[in-house]
Structures are given as structure tokens and as C-alpha cells.
Amino acid sequence: MSWKTHTVFNQPRPLSNSNLFLSDTPLREAVIREGADWDVELLSSVGQQLGSAESLELGRLANAHPPELLRYDTRGERLDDLRFHPAWHLLMQGLFANRVHNLPWLKDARPGVFVARAARFILHAQVEAGTLCPITMTFGATPLLQATLPQVFTRWLPALLSDRYDAHLQPGDQKRGLLIGMGMTEKQGGTDVLSNTTRAEPLDARHSGEAYRITGHKWFFSVPQSDAHLILAQTKGGLSCFFLPRFLPDGTRNAVRIERLKDKLGNRSNASSEVEFCDATGWLIGDEGEGVRQILKMGGYTRFDCALGSHGLMRRAFSVALYHAHQRQIMGKNLVDQPLMRQVLSAQALQLEGQTALLMRLARAWSMPHDEHERAFARLFTPAAKYGLCKSGISFVAESMEVVGGIGYCEESELARLYREMPVNSIWEGSGNVMCLDVLRVLARQSGAAEMLAREFESVKGVNRHFDSRWRQLKLRLRHLREVEAREITTSLLHLMMAVQVMKRLEPSLADAWCRQFLDPRGGASVTAAISERLFLRATGS
Image 1 (cartoon, rainbow, N blue to C red):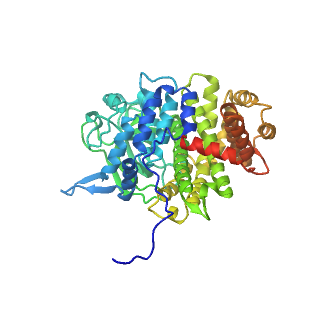
Image 2: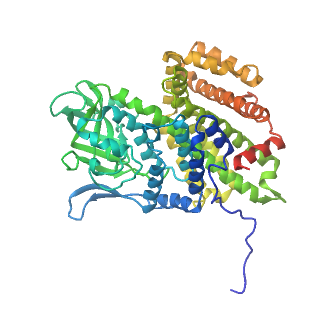
Image 3: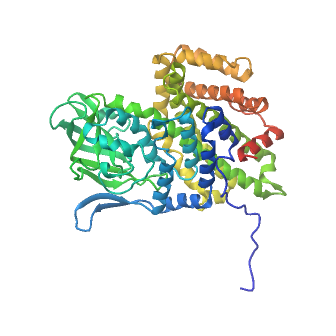
């Protein structure tokens, strides 16, 4: 062509080939502060690898090529298998190699191991979220299975604790690495699992570890390619938990029929399914009637991962927006230098500062299960964090998309995928109302919860007037817990605990800006240019 219509300029480059860990000063500081300084070198290596253009492309490919359901084999026999794009398997190999699925459960686990694992989870979430679903379920199930795995499956334990990803369609005792899924909800009940109709009848005795015949269905059967699932079914003794392997001990396929894969809003890489149990065989975990109690042993871990995953998505969205704003010019200035845009980006940076500090503090609490104070901290602030972070993430990513503009709304941008993914963590493992009611339950019944709050909050009394005022208001509400105020109470608790962390850990000017932004009832005040610059430098590791 001898002519052209226009010259392309003022188009920012996409963000790639950055170190996701070293560029995140708040995360790096928190990892060291909360006891996982021993993992910094590995986290730096993981951050470099995950921030590469190659890794980001794997995340795109895994979502551009969703899994395919293979209901029958070439002979017409029932197969109930799935075919994934190679990008999925490469991402899963990375997660297993970094032990995101089992790091705290190793015998030689070091102090602060939950902090290290949480940081690795956040880094992976910035590349691809669908692969984290099988990882978090396996992570939550492993300690339960270490204690209760039926005798016939004890040969599975070494593979549960390995760092090898094994996607072969084989019995679990023949594999180098295992995935564990969950299947709890049914069409008629959803969150109300007590209304489940799936039934289990013993093949012999009604005892823990014994085999039962299971008939029924699951409306959401996550990661159907897993080597086994933990499911809920009704027994004579009540709702019970069962270990449902993909292959039976004799090597034959279990009678789990995949009816279809879900067409979900969010990531396309992961498989969620609807299944029917046609006289399938499962092994009782715990006693009959203890199903909910057994599943709740996993619930805290998976709910914490929801908050970590949402934070990772938010961090990536902000990084993309800030990188764009540093390059894009409007009316002679870079976007980042426009006063109103600086306020938008500063508010996002402050939000991430508080979240990072709270999440790593919460990870430290999970690392200390034998300390009563830390146990109460984890029990209260895990559902609070899941509610607050997962809920706020939706509008956060939308704001980042608005910073980037029209191209952020197009599928060429990773922001579209991040935005679609955000609602799932608010829904999965208990919706917002369920989390807030759980917070009230902890406040009313958990031994040591009130003492823990007083100790944490009173330690910074007098440092910031906005904090003191908000804490006085909350104490009045805590005297008479009302269900209709559950969301307000949960939000206040979360913001106050974030404030505690930033006041203790950040330089005073940043801590004061955070408290004015999130605790001032009049709304967030303007952030000075100096504070904005400091926040942006911390957000880019400069």
C-alpha cells in the first residue's frame, strides 16, 4: 500500500514480563513481617516466572480453549472424562511444583508456612484463576483425609503430599499426584444442604470408613476429573460426609455419571459439572450425621482462599490500570498525573495496602492453630475477609477497567476475564449473607472472640481519631447483635482490623490516609500528591 489512513500512537503497551512479587512492596514487606522471610527467594523466582509473557499467555489459552466433556469412548462405552488444553496442564504443573495445594501439610512445614502459601496463591491468582479451584479443594481436603481416610485408601497419602501433577486417568494408588474435589449442593437446596435428597445405604456396617451405596445427584460437582470427591448424602443417622473415588479399589470406574459441564460466567478454563450417582460407592468419613461438621473442617481453608484469590485478581487489575495510566496521555499529561485520576488510583492503592496487611496477618493466625488468640482471630476474620474482599472486588475491577477505557472492555484485554471472574468468590463456599451470619455466630459463641478483639483494637487506641470513633460505635452494636445489622458489623470489623494493621505497619502518613479513606463517615478525603507518589512507588516496587 502506498497510502495509510492514520498513525498509531499514544497506545500503551500491555503489562508483561514483570516480577509479580518484587513489584509488590506491600506483599513483600508483609511476607517478611509475618514470619515467611525464608520463602522470599522462592517467591521472587515464582513472581518472575508468573509475570512473564509466556505465563500470561498460558492463562489466556486455558480460557480460550475450555475443557471438553468426553462422555463415551471410541467403543461407545461410558467414559465420563474431560479433555483440557495443554495450557491448563502446564499451569497445574506450576501450582503443584510450588506446592500451593499442600505446603502447610508437610511434616517439615516451617513457621509462617501459611503466609508463604498465601503469597504463592496470590501470585498465581494474577495469572489464571480457574486452576485455583482444584488446588484449593485439594488443600482443604488433605488434612481431613490425613486423619480420616478409609483404610482401603491409605496408599493414596504419599501422592496427596507430593509435588507432582498427574492428569492420567488411573486409580489413585497408581498416580504420583492427586486432586480432591467437592460435591455438596443439589438442585432443590443450594446452601441449604440439609435439604439434600441424595441417599447412602451401607453395604455392611454403619461405621466410619465403611462402604455405602450412593444414589442421587449433585447440581455443582466441582472439577469432575478429580481422583475423588467429598460429598454429602443422607443416611439413617442424618446428613453424612463420604469419600467418593473416581476408581474403586478393584480398578473399576465408580458409577458417577457426568450429565453436563456448567456454562459459567467466569473463567472458562475450569470444569464444573452436574452429575448423577447410579449406585456409586462411597466411604463414610466420620460418623453418620456428622456431614456438616466434617465439611466445615475444610470450610475455613477454602473461604480464606476465596479472599486470597479475590485479592490477587484485584492486585492484577490495579497493576494493569496503573501501568496504562503511566503511559496514556490525555490533554498533554499522562493519565496518572491528572488530579482526579490520581485520586482514583490512590484509593485503589490504599485499599490494596489494607487488604495485603490483613490477609498476611490472617495467614499468620492460620499458622498458629494452638494459640487461643490466633485461633479466635482466624475463626472470626476468615469469613469477614471472604465477605468484604470478595464483595468489593467486583467494583474494584470495574474501576480498573474504566481507567483503561474501551479496550479494557474488550476481550483482548485481560481485564474482561478478571471482571467476569470476580463474582464467583462471593458465591462459592458461602455467599455474603452466609459469611456475615457466621461472623455473628462467632461473636456470640466463640470462646475468646471478644477478648481477642479488645486486645487487638485497644492496642492502637488513641493513634487515630477516625479509628477510635468507629470502634466506639461498633462496641455499642456488639452489645446486642442483630441479624439485620450483620453486614454492617462485618464491614466495620474488617475495616477496623485493617486499620490496626496499617497503623502498626505503615509509615504514619500512609496509615492516616488509609483511615481517612475508609473510616471517615464523611467519605474518603483527597490524597496529597506526595502520598499518591509514595503509594504508586510501593505498588510498582520502585
